[in-house]
Image: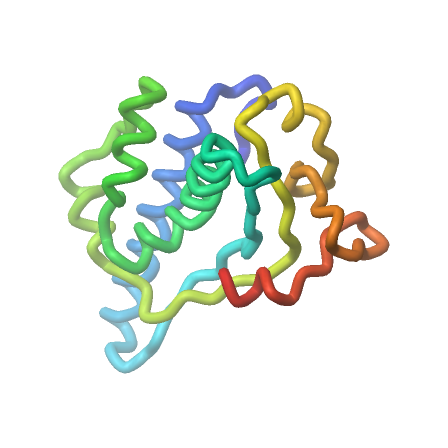
Length: 162
């Protein structure tokens, strides 16, 4: 994204906002030039399971999955979902959005595509999450799943969830 490594969460989400607006503007441009054309997006497909059946781990997994899925929600629905607005509020993140940005986001994709890579597990206990490993996504591996040569969990059932 062109951000300094020490960028905070607010800067990362602001950069993501700019990417979402740019994507919507590309959709608008494509549809104005080629009205019959179909244009989509491409998301990273990954799924997070709760590490345990504790309710706190279930909530942590749900929130983590939402943070990955929100890109597609914005691009397909044309606005930020309530769960992300709540996340921003709870984390003191203010997205600088102009009226033009909000209007541009309404130019939604015609289809969603994704590349499915792996699944992993997450805990509400940050000390456990800090020990997680991975080269793109850092999650605790599922003990029940086989791993690829890259250490990614091979989980065909996870694809159905995505």
